[in-house]
Length: 186
Image 1 (cartoon, one colour):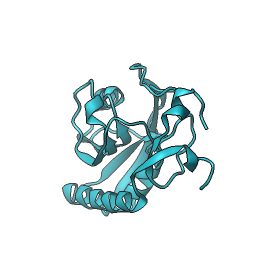
Image 2 (cartoon, rainbow, N blue to C red):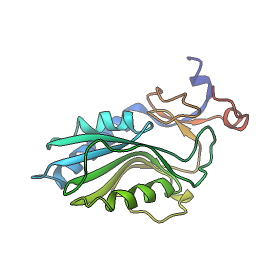
Image 3 (cartoon, rainbow, N blue to C red):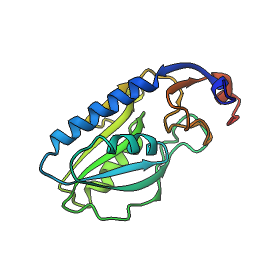
Image 4 (spheres, rainbow, N blue to C red):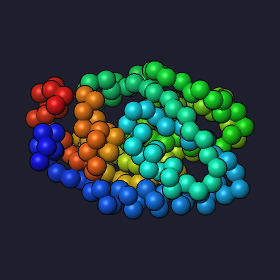
């Protein structure tokens, strides 16, 4: 066991289950957008692993771009204040846009992104997320493609971090409470 794996209390979703579900999502997205070109907008940094796997299973023409937001920092609870740290490089006007998220929790970040992207006049806008933590939702948002619905546990791995660590774990794991309760990031 490597040093970061010792911080994981349990494996919530294993590597094989993630791979299978991401492949299914890619097939569904490809079918739903057949005959169109799609723009994937990944929300950095957490969604980068999900995006890289998902886009390999999307068989229609597509482009990718990135946005970075901040609502957590080095804490476990969203502050509710969303800031754009990096905006898109390409316009979304008249494009079919699919926002690719790692996890949807309260819905604050997603609601904010949907609002600002809708103002840019895309042809359509939908959302794909690997993880949906519905019981934490405080803002109503529509999520079109969901990999897994998960309980209210603090998860890391497959792109998700705590204090910028744990993103490289190949599975979704539940972080031991003493790790994030102490404020340590490793």
